[in-house]
Each structure stands twice: as C-alpha cells, then as structure tokens.
Amino acid sequence: MNLNLDNIAVENNVAAQRFEAIVEGQRAVLTYHRFPNHISLDHTEVPESLRGNGLAAKLTRTALEFARANHLRAVPLCPYVSRYLVKHPEYQDLLSPDDWQRILSL
Image (cartoon, rainbow, N blue to C red; front, side, top):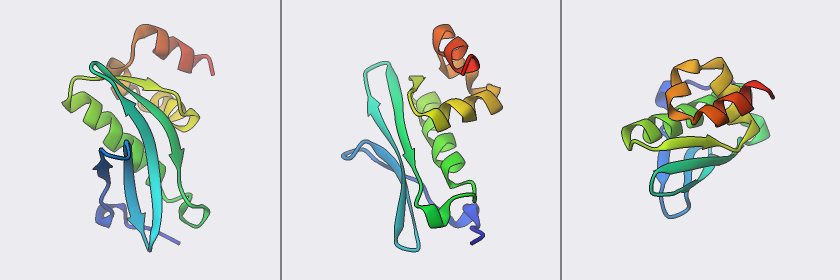
C-alpha cells in the first residue's frame, strides 16, 4: 500500500500522551511522557500493513517539531526515534550532549 502522507493528519492526543495517525481504521502511534522541560519519546508503533510508507517518520517529525515549538528537550527512548535522529541531525539541538553521544554510539 502506498500512502500519501500529505493527506494523513498526526494529532497530539494529550490525554493518552501519544501522537497518533489513523489510516484506514488503523492507528499508528508514538507514545511519550511530557515533563516541565523535556519530553521522552518512548515507543513508535505502526500496524504491519502500514509499514514502509514513512508513517513512523511523520510521527517522529511531528513529535520533534512539538518539542521545538514548546522549548522542550527531547529524550529519545525509542530505537526508531534514535535512528531517525542520526539520519536527521537538524534536530540535534533538541537533545542533551549526552543523549546525542548515546544515540551516535548505537
């Protein structure tokens, strides 16, 4: 299945502490915990039938842009988010130096 990501909205479900997108009745999520000065990005889950279309990347970008807009440090606990950050160093400023070094060594 090829998805047009431009037509897929990612919502911040604050009550559930997750960014989510619903595609064809299936929910893709990036769970988080928000703290006063940082946000931990905990787990990304995309239904198998939707994988490989960039949906996890869109969830991650949305979460990182949320962190930037709210002046929050991002703490990547999810392996997918860590790999995304290595490929997209434009978000390095959202990480502590220790977190950046940790994900570079993965």
